[in-house]
Amino acid sequence: MDTLTPQQVETEQLSDWRMLFNALHARFRTGDFATGLRLVDAIGQAAEEMNHHPDLELTYGALAVRLTSHDAGGVTGRDVRLARTISELAATEQAVADPASTQVLELALDTEDAEAIKPFWRAVLAMSDSASDDELVDPMGRLPTLWFQQTTAHETPRQRFHLDVRVPPEEAEARVAAALEAGGTLVGDDRAPRFWVLADAQGNRACVTTWQDR
Image (cartoon, rainbow, N blue to C red; front, side, top):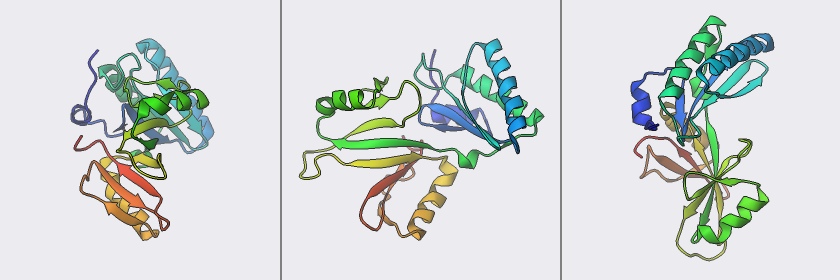
């Protein structure tokens, strides 16, 4: 089954959903826990009928949904179809989509030789290899993806962690502006809108990233 690019997903006009990394994400404001439970039950029935199952995170007042085709390694047409169904079910429960609040955190580790250190991180975090050679993923879906970013050899620190936060494209500039207003500095935006490199007042870095220009 062919996976869809973010550009192809855009043409599907899934207004409630945003593609972040290799999955569709939505968050619905339910107002109370009982409404969220009813929506979970309805989504469960639809998922069983389609034989395709989303990841659900129910909290008081909100339900977060993640859709991906694990056997294909990304978003496919069946994810799009289920996303439309879930949006319809949410509308029936008067649950309001909040796409601006969707985000995914990834850990990035700079290294000149990923293969030399990947076994250690696979073991200590109980992670698994992903479809991409430069990533490790949590099979239980609890931990962020660990991405090994290729760098040249450098002095201390030989490896450096930083955070990559993937946000909807329309939210990226506001997120960058908020970070700068909060005392951060802009290290580089020459690759925007793919990513902006930011740093806090002590030089610790983070990247705001989108799917655009990839």
